[in-house]
Length: 306
Ligand SMILES: Cc1ncc(COP(=O)(O)O)c(C=O)c1O
Image 1: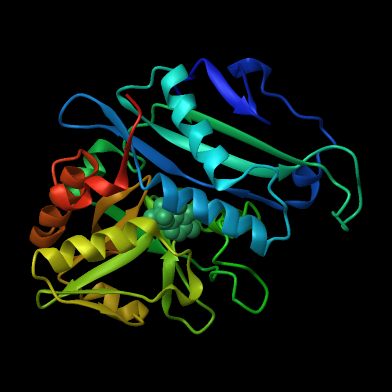
Image 2: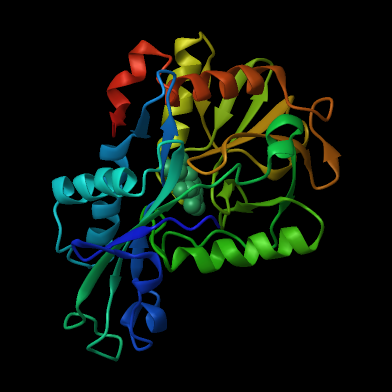
């Protein structure tokens, strides 16, 4: 991680190393907290812009609502804090932004109403999440033995810290087995999502991606669907079974961190001809154009910070 100078914490900028919490902070023990993952990019005119800042901040507050955490800051205050954080840290080449709303020190036991709510936002430069080579050649994927936490016992629509135990177990299993990323099924056996991304396949020129029944409401998935439709591709939202992933012509992940990452293998089955698929490449390029401010239609989604 490339450290930046400041972290925004509870309304103030503090030095990176001074952004500390008490060891008895509630979230550390019981796992109720919510996060976001947002990205700022250097755009074509040299300025830096945060992509879909409003949507990410809204989802952060929605996640907090779902998990019974009262944010002490409003949408506007949190948006401004993210803009100022990028400005103050001079992250003009772009950055990954990580807000977290969590329960601090002051109450123990599961009933969390009396626990103080804290908010921190960090930002730092972060390269391709699944590696530069993965972006060009595609990554290798394992379908995890663990399923995505079902809606009957989890809150998959919340970007809740607690959900990442499920993701982490799947990711660890996949990486230890020699793969790059894990794909999780839902409790019915249909593909839900990856450990930190959404999933698409291409069959006969048609893009297929699961509904968000058992996944985060992904902002990048929505963007890629819009871009694909602009380019004239048919997009279908329907469930995908495990074996259908094996016979896809192309497959790729979408997410703020993974952006559009091609998949070249799933469980020892080569996808397509084992390289980045043609349509995947078109969408990948189009996505990078959008975040770089090169596509007029999506300029409304960019918040310039300088
Ligand atoms: C579990 C999970 N699913 C999907 C995504 C993709 O969501 P988004 O495109 O909004 O970043 C992420 C990343 O934030 C994630 O952590």
